[in-house]
Image 1: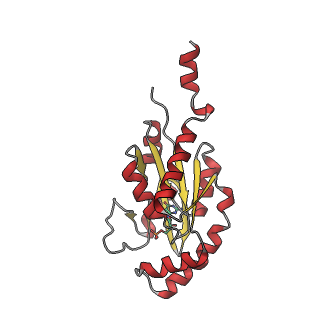
Image 2: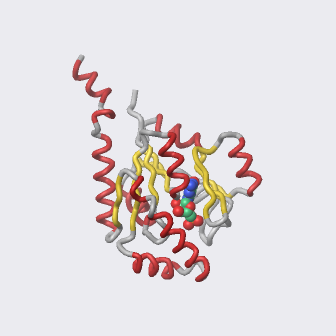
Image 3: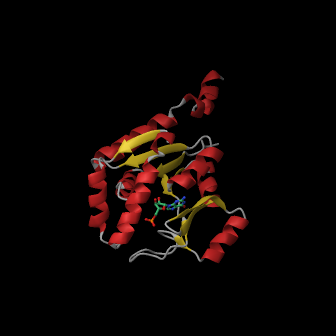
Length: 201
Ligand code: 5GP
C-alpha cells in the first residue's frame, strides 16, 4: 500500500506572485498534481477549459454544489470558484501530492474539514510591490486592479491561520522554501507510521 499524498492548500493575494512560484515548483516536482478548479468567471486570453479552469455557468456551478461535488467553494470578485472533490481525493489516495491554489474563504473550509492538509500563504514582500505587480499585469482595468488590491488587504489578514508563510521576494527562494516545507511535512512522525511498523516487526 502506498502512502497517501499530501493535500497542500496554497493561497496568497493576487499579485503575490503565487502563480509564478507555483509554475516553477511544478516544473521541479513531478509528483505534484495541481487541482483544476471550476469557476463562473470568463476565460482570460490563452486560458483553456479543463486546463486552467473548468469554466461553468452559474447554473452548472450551483448544480455541482447541490450534488456535493465541491470540496470547497467561494464567491470571489462576484464569481464562484470551487474545487471539484473527486480528483483531489483520488490523487491523494494514490500517493500523489495535490495542490489547491485557492483564495482564503475556500482555504478556511478545507482546513476545517481536512485536518491533515498543509497550508501555505504566499505574501508579497511589500504593499508597494504588490500594487506594482497588479498594475504591471495589464490584463485588467484600473478599477479591477483597485478592487483586487482591496481584496488582497483583506486576504492578508488570514495569513496567520496558515501553517506556513512564504515571502515571495525571489521566486527561486520561495520555491526552495515550499520544497523544504513539503519535505519536512513528509517526515512528520504521524506520516511515518507505516515505516515505523515495518521496522518494529
Ligand atoms: P483568478 O480569477 O485570478 O484566476 O483567481 C482569483 C482567485 O480565485 C485567486 O486567489 C485564486 O487562488 C482563487 N481560486 C482559484 N480557484 C479556486 C477554487 O477552486 N476555490 C477557491 N476558493 N478559490 C479559487
